[in-house]
Length: 111
Image 1 (cartoon, one colour):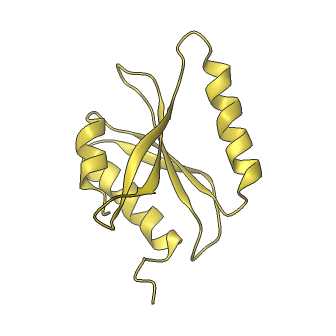
Image 2 (tube, helix red, strand yellow):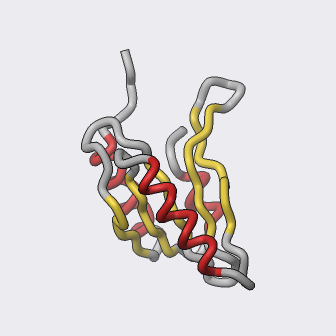
């Protein structure tokens, strides 16, 4: 039996976590309500934007890891990558987050 939260509930929790850390989050695309994949774009305040997705870990957990980073010299490429990602996976929830401390935010997400 899968013990994962339904995707729409987890997205709500991610939004509240961003707000609790003094930031904000918005849903860029809605995926499948219960089992959709969740990806998070963290807007860089002093860093390039970055895409985080869950990846299986050796201990059996599924942690959010950085899978793509914006190239400051070619910001359009990052946007195109996100659009392609959405086209390939219509079940994808894409959430944009703006927080002061990226590492603290990612570490607070359940695995």
